[in-house]
Image 1 (cartoon, rainbow, N blue to C red):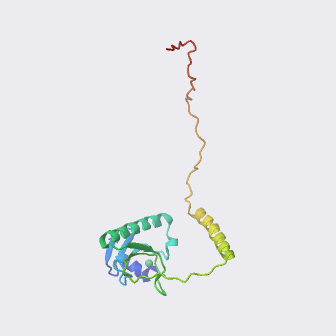
Image 2 (cartoon, rainbow, N blue to C red; image 1 turned 45 degrees about the vertical axis):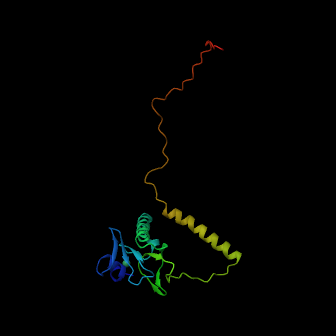
Length: 180
Ligand SMILES: [Zn+2]
């Protein structure tokens, strides 16, 4: 989606009013207007990304760290049992969000939040194939996301100009040992 048409970009650019609880140069935290529970906050990166996987790793680490801090503030202020951090492309069933978001959803014993799925039956062969596919992809991700050093990491160690002579301990063989 184009940024001009993205509702979350509009919120971040203050073209649409919001109930802001957090704002810095990079991230905005606003109360969800259709909350799953009391104190449901959405953390909006100000820069448009279609999903969190498009974010550069460094930026994501900063983003998730802020989201965690705001989640902790919700925990302290509203005293829910827990605050879930949820990344999803679906705000509600079938309603796909165009912008990378993390939801902070406070959980209370009497809330109506419901994460339900039907457990799938899987054959052993399928598990093996999936395991192999993910493991091999992790290697590619590691390679892609590992920062490339600008200069050689391993440089030849310089030889010190004044090599310290190894001094052998002096043993005085003529030393008299007095035995009492
Ligand atoms: Zn956007």
